[in-house]
Length: 469
Image 1 (spheres, rainbow, N blue to C red):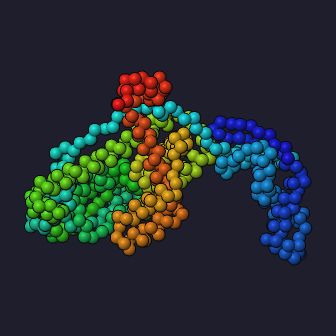
Image 2 (image 1 turned 45 degrees about the vertical axis):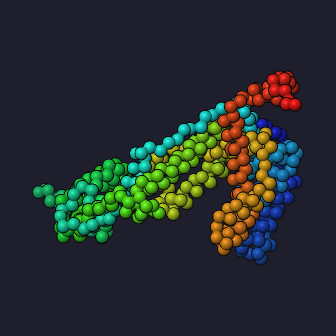
Image 3 (image 1 turned 30 degrees about the vertical axis):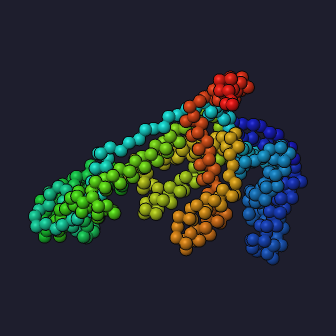
């Protein structure tokens, strides 16, 4: 085979491969033998029809396509060996010419990283605190959780909750009217809701799909019915119903008002092992502070890594980004399906086109890959690795916090190859981030550290601090 090589941007090489006719013929014959065993041709026993008959029945293009599929792995391996290329990902290829056969094969190469100077980065940790307002907000949320909805004998007011049956449909349209204006032919409206026993909050909701619905419930008492209409908004999920008038009928079964507990010592005992509300406040403050510190550490790490990635130069083959993008979309679509949503429904509700969504996902995928390869380069520069004994220690550490039976089960689960690999990666990432944090929070610059290790500096230190007799 004749193989020529051309390097193109983004860590790719294009191999132009001219395949010798004998090799092409060998695989065309192999394709014929595969096809002839799969088809029935009148006048011939299965597998016995001559090649020209098969070509006439199936078409030369199909035989050629089948032959290419059989031949490509052999051609590809020979081509990359001759070119001295080490593929990093699956290739893309096309037929550039049929006679003689010329293939253009785009080969992805391993990403390259030019690591930026990360040792002179200095980054201060964020000071965190918890305010009285934050503690109070948390307590208010707990009060909300422990609140009870109590039936009342009065009409519904804002901030109440009503138990109702709801039926609703778009208003019917006249397709043909008489001279007097009455409908001769009409189209029925489309039902959009029909449900019973719904607990509905009597509270205006700006982002509601039925704007003004909650307000219509004000003044409704148990045993009463009400009919009203609403114009469906521009962000209504069903595009063909946007702007249409919908008619609703509501039957009220109960009106309830919220009773929230007092913030006292009795409430403190309800929400935890506390004797007083002050003790509960202190525990909440400590918990919020720990959470704030963890969030601050996360922001610190993200900022630090982004600074290092921005200083570095990473070249990635497009095929690698393609695969990461596809996996990200698949994972997100699977999570949506678990919630009963399809991706296209989510995009419509978010006001986002598929192209815009994919563009955002691709940018994130590229950033993740760049970060991963930069951190790998840092680990090599800092000689960071994880030993199997460290993974064993981590498994024991995690299991030791559990009861005996659970601990044994955890050790067994965490000991399988997939779990060990995941733990190993977590430990590796932790080591890399600890080292980068140590550098970024150091009080000395690399130059100062280098000077302090020099013979002159050591001699000056020795003179300034003579050994004690």
